[in-house]
Image (tube, helix red, strand yellow):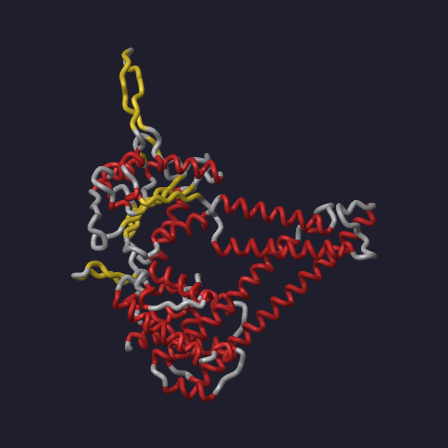
Length: 513
């Protein structure tokens, strides 16, 4: 199955394992909670989905790459304990707590999360001395003499033998005690994720045409050569930062991430062309409504790769702008929920905003400590706190102006004055929020116009051609585009969407190249 389906399977498994009956006991007892074993090629996202699952399920995560451990660190160190049996004293070997088991208790103490995932990576690549311990771990859920705490689900991952010569096969007894999931690379599924995390558009445009290079691993006389989804994502981050710094990404840089010289060279050549198209086709002008006939004529005569790259540039700009609008919308929604509590306190305007800011900071810090914040959620909290600080500063200045009913400082005036002052402060704050809401509406309208201008250009340059098919298809695939189109009623989008069999047509176009 693909990594998206594997993630759903693991989430369903965790929900089932952590479900409790009416007496508070786990409906599936721990002895029957089979560890999940993910087997798939390197870089396909096995580790990454575990982090996502833990955050989405609001549970803890302890992750280990077991090949970094010795037998002693995995099961603990031996020591001699005196015990009595039948009236006689014996020296018995005991073990200190495993570092891995101890780390689970450390996580519980640090975060307060009593349920979680213990993720063991590369479990089928352990040394010969550690192999029996891993079998015992999967079969009995123990390291040495110490059990994994109840409420912690075991997930392990490994690579198939064709990708790692150190792989060890599990016996039937062990396999009969686990849930085994085989993960296969799937570009279309990865592309959904890629749009959400803003993978560089050049990479998406390239892989749309060269899907065979998305996850490509081969053995040659010169050794292993490979390009993996993880390599493409890490390269994307580097390209984006290099662009901000004004640095060049060439073949020598690319091959550090795509360790396959042929693929690295091919993508480096494509990236040069992509940069050239960015300069030649002024996409910002196009989306602002400036459509030059000369550019349309040039594009009509261009090679398919060039036309596809320009479509990709349009989609990238639109997706980025839609993403900004959606983040702004989330910010306004979160701010509204926070500000609803403004009038519930007895403090003055600025004092109450300070209290709301403090509560938001505490909530943010608590989630950070539990490691439950995604990067997107973390940014949202930071923006909410920044905006609350702006409101607080504005209220302080406003309260100092002559003629305001509420006093500055702690706002301790008589009851009627305090009530009037708080009402006035709320009106002031509501005006500020309304101004921010108006700015959001303007931003939404501008993004809507950009989409309409994008359609104007696509119609002028391509009409109902295969490029329009791909344009509509990618609008339906891109996370930011689909979310935006749920709120903006774009008539031409629905017309083309209905008229063009976008999915099948795109596959036929790209397959015939």
